Image (cartoon, rainbow over all chains, first blue to last red):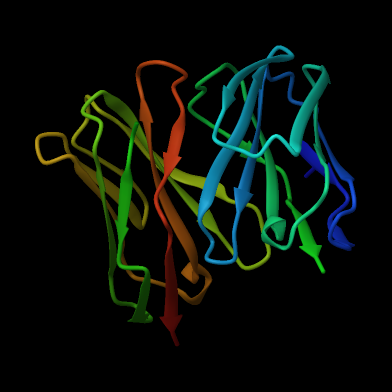
Length: 113
Length: 113
């Protein structure tokens, strides 16, 4: 299913590089999210956008900059990648802010060497 | 903010037996409690949820119970099957502020054939 899609699926890069992950949803939802899942499987919210406006910004280094060109897209740009950024990044969407059902994307597995 | 604790972190049960996963939450304003299942290498998917005005909900072999007074909720899987093997996450959503969904740390459930 392609309700929420992410690219790339895998990303292997060197420390210090800058990379972007893209997310798109075709569900007509108003709200999109970025979650980080670390090696211990802990799932933690990073950002939330509602109709292109930032509504949740957890304690995330400012090397991470989300961008929402329209409500169907939420991209994540990461500057100066560090080893600790290695994780699986999941995009998600819900119909409204705080929406009960969250659809997750397939995840982007980032490995920083 | 909300804090969700989940136990156990790993659980192995014989096929056909029942499995129980427990979560506690800290914010008495939380009003929505979903459970997500994440199979290996896949995205988290909602399997069942419960709202704070309900004490129990059942969907075939899975059920969730909520004790608002004690601030804990549990997932029950009966007649377990090999395809139930996955990581299960509980979550709690506060009714205030940004209505952020806070996830538990996950339980890796293994069904032994």
